[in-house]
Image 1 (cartoon, helix red, strand yellow):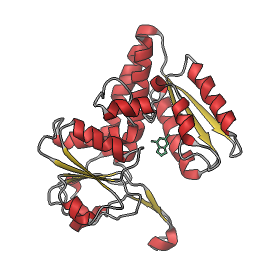
Image 2 (cartoon, rainbow, N blue to C red; image 1 turned 90 degrees about the horizontal axis):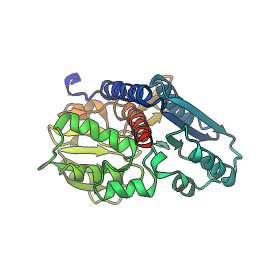
Image 3 (cartoon, helix red, strand yellow; image 1 turned 60 degrees about the vertical axis):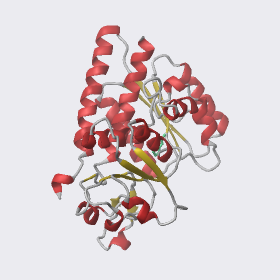
Length: 294
Ligand code: GUN
């Protein structure tokens, strides 16, 4: 079973080694230090944990790393004004506004106000549009699908011709760009979601099954085609009283142990897609810095 595990932590570490080398080369050759700004509004503990991990990784890559922590009561205008300041700051090559924002703020106008060349999250319509039209090198690809794709290619190589891929989930943040990246690699792609008739049957058709449903351990062993590659994008915290263990634990959207018996390769949670997302954020940031330096 262990041999089937696709180790996102290890693969992310090799991406980070390449990012460090690239940032060091840029600084040596041009004097430009790669810069990343992360903005967080409010005090959601999970979001703070993610942002902390991003900041620490940026520091490990020897980037200039800036974090703006804004109060829950921050207004739309104040947040927009901060993004404007970061847009014109020449020492910053990447800007990430952690989502979700508090309910009184609209995330879309904020995301669309980030300069596309600094949108290292890959969420600006210009970057999303480049992915949708197959221009994968011209813009910045959204980090979670980009990271999931590295894991798929680690298992299958760059050309997915003849393989059926099923993405469960149709969000702008993940499902749609993931489907487009799989399509660009020649997979035959289905996007399934909560309204799909007979999800288990749709999933059993997948040589590559990507789960981003947001429901703990929803994908069961009998949803998985024998030998399939299973990529679990879910991060769900199971509360202590429910799991009877005295402390909460993280699980994915896939019932790992039982699906690992059937799958040919499977990503764990934690230690699968999560570390890849952060690694791809660093990769996008150093690419943005190189482009700016010309
Ligand atoms: N919140 C959860 N995942 C993400 C992400 O990839 N980017 C941003 N900005 N916020 C998130």
